[in-house]
Amino acid sequence: MGLWPFNRSRRKLPFDDPAMFDADPAGLDAAGRKARPAAKADEVELTTWDHPERAQRLRAVIALWFVVAAGVTGYFLYQRALDLADPNRNLTNILGTVGGQTSAVLRDADVIKILNRKYKLQPRFSSSLSLPMVETPPSGQDFLWPSNPYGVGIYRRGAKRPMVASQVLFTSPLVVFCRPEVTQALYTRGLVGVGSGGNYRVDMRALARLVADNRPWTELGISQYRGPISLGTTLPDQTNLGMIHAGLCANILLGDRVKTAADVGRIKPRLRNVFQGANLIGENSDETVPDFMTAKHVRQPMMMGYESEALDFKLALQRSPQPNAKIGDILYPNPTVWRTHPFIAINLRGKKLMEALADPAIRDIAWERYGLRPVSGTSNAAAITVMHVPSQIDGIIALPDLSVVPALLEDL
Image (cartoon, rainbow, N blue to C red; front, side, top):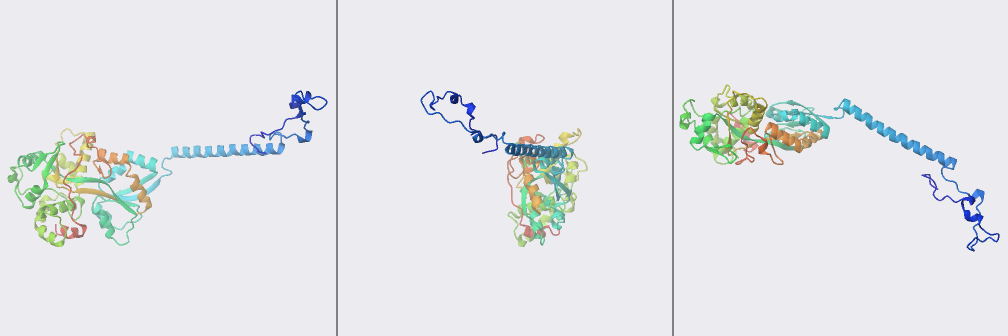
């Protein structure tokens, strides 16, 4: 006999069957069948509700169910109220160090919102130059995010440095920032052409030879600049840009990829001309690009940099216009190299952030607001409306092996 909702097999009482009153004295009913004898009073089966003990047990079960339901509902309402009062209460803090433009991505309000709401993560980070970041043993950090293609290799050279995973999340090609009058001179002499998307392409092999051979500006038909043709860059042994530029020029000037110490010895004299004092623009191109692009305090009419720096600056200029700004040109070298942003997950907390940063919505924000191309998926060039941006970068070559980089950068 069950407790819920009641016993469906309840037998009828004698007075429930009208046929009992029509039976004849012989015990036959109207159809001539033998009449069923009346049930005895003590044989009547009671329903659950009629049974006092069972009814009490059923009421207790129902009451307990309501109590549990009310408790669960109250708990979730309480948690919801706490979340509304303090949205960050259940977030996991992820500590690390970030270099370059990736710090702007982690500061973006919409990126933070995605990390908070979708992944329950809150990045806490400081900014640093990429080389010191990976050369220093980590302490109390969950991740490192350098902006150097050699970052993971340099980090791994250190003894007993923990790492559970690494992944390149964003990338940007090396480009040349150029004043319009120099662009025109290079175009006239066939070193610059116009790509299918309306962007400028520069023959980087020819340009690097002009700089390495100390050719004068007059060779390009330019008289307003004196001395040899200069191509501004940063310190090669201390900055990402200088290191990557040195690797690109070494491979170009050698005519093949620099692989051995003998290759370094052959190319070093000409490479020194590329990094002579007149060509050095400081320690950080991020601080130089805005001045160069608006013709403020320009020391050289050409400067190496990254596509992301130019896009980031022009996107910011679109949000806060400067009417008198004389915007420089962006030349896409062929060949060129990638500046990658490898994420180093020191532990599992760092790995969770690395996986979250691969979210398609974050990838689109990084490209459309900061000019960082995604490694996975495609970048919508039409989303960048402030300049002609190629959807694909042609002529990418590999950098020299990390094993020869110290010798390559020595004495530059």
